Structures are given as C-alpha cells and as structure tokens.
Length: 310
Image 1 (tube, helix red, strand yellow):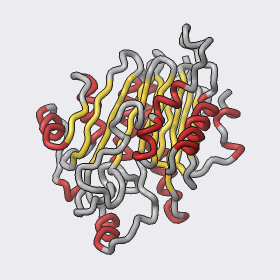
Image 2: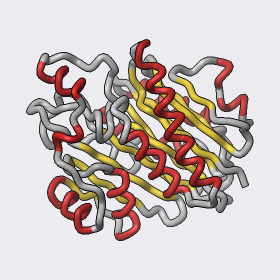
Image 3: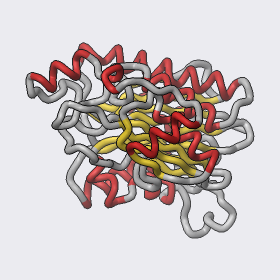
Image 4: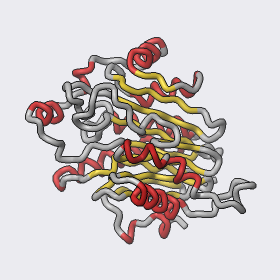
C-alpha cells in the first residue's frame, strides 16, 4: 500500500524574499505528517500534525500570522474530513484557539458539526484544546500592514494537507485566517465540506484561494469527482490521474467565475496531483515511492507529479 502526503501553503503571489520561508515551512509540515504515517499513524493524525506546523509558522495565513479584518481582529476557520466514514468537523470565526485544525479534528471525532464563534471556542476549551488570547496570534508584520492600510506583500491564502495512511484511509484538512480587510463574521470556503476540502473512497482534496470563487463551483468535491468516470464508479477505482483531475477542476473554476485558486489532490492509489491559477503555490509532498520530500513554490514542467509518480 502506497503511503502519501501533500501540503500546500496557499495559492498566492510569493515575494522573492519569502520563497525560502514558504518552502522551509511546507517542508517542515510534510515531514511532521510523514513521521506520523511512517510510525503507522492514521491519515487524520498526519493531516493534523502537518497543519499544526503551518499554523505555528507566521509565514502562512493560519493561526499565527493570520490576516486582520477591517476592525483589526483575526478570524480563524478550519476543517477536517476523512474518507472511511465521511466524518467531518469544522470551526469558523474563532480567535482564542491556538490550533483550529485540532478543534476541527475533535469535532470530527465527536459528531459532525460546523461550530462558529463562541460556541466553537467553548467546545475547544471543554475538550482540552490549547486556548490563547487573540493578540498572541497577531504577528507584528500583519499589525503594521493593517495600521498602514497596506495590502500584504504575499497574497494571503489558506493552508492545507491531504494524506493517505497504510490502511488506505484518506483525510483532508484546511486552515485559514481569511482574507485581509474582510468584514467581521465572514466565513469563506475553508470550513465548508465540498468547497474547502473533501474526502471519500476515491480521493481527497484541499483547496486554497478566493473563497467566494471556490464555493459556487464546489472545488474540492469537483476535483475528487473528476478522478472517477462512469465506468469506474461502480468499483471505486480511479481512472483519471490526480494531476489531470486537479488541473481540470481549476480550469472549470477559471471558466465559470473570476478569482484565483489552487488544490492538492490524492487518489485511492496514493497518486498525487496539484494545480493552481495564481502566480505561485507553495507545495511539498512525500510518498513511499520517493527517497525524500519534494518542495516547490511554482510548478515547473520537470516537477510535474504526474510524470514522477505515475
């Protein structure tokens, strides 16, 4: 059984001086998740471990380093879904939770809900999740940009991870700080099953980009559905390579709505794909077929996973 994991740091424009921070952060995240998988851990454990690393890194727009809304506050969303039983959990509009992905995982294990604001934070506290004061999650860079009314140099974007464990179970997770200068209470695609993430027996996907564009095309579910055609749907085998399915999903979004987006995709065979229509997208991945993790900020012809892992 192939074991695999892929993470993304967001579909965005990455300033040259921040390229190394993006690759270093994604590489650290994929290594954390890979360690879990190598030790026999399940896909949910791996996704949580990887995204917690990204949430700890102010390079990315998730937890520490989250963008500020029009009032100068942070608002965090996260979700997780697994393929085995289609269980899922999500949180939105929280600012006192250190690791939103871990709260989403707790909800997944209890009962599928999307909890928001005070109710989500109350659930987190009652279930022993790490809490913090909101100002502890605001980086100096984000505060300065907000005070000077400047747009972030790096276009903020959701982070995410998809993994497949030794038992063939798939899981997807996403986490975000939203968009800069968003209205209070806004909820984007990140915590919405089918839009920001999806996982079933055919594959799993995590998306990133403009939530208001991702939601109407149900990007994550669209990408997973594209893995399977009518003839293979009965037995659950994948016919389309994830590389092709990911690109087709992004093409569908581009044809139907304006906006930038990206997605990472794993199929039930552990094959990897990713695509985006933004300038850059930080991605790292590792599979049992590779000697070491691969990491990129921009897709080059020679880095196409479909060629390397077919």
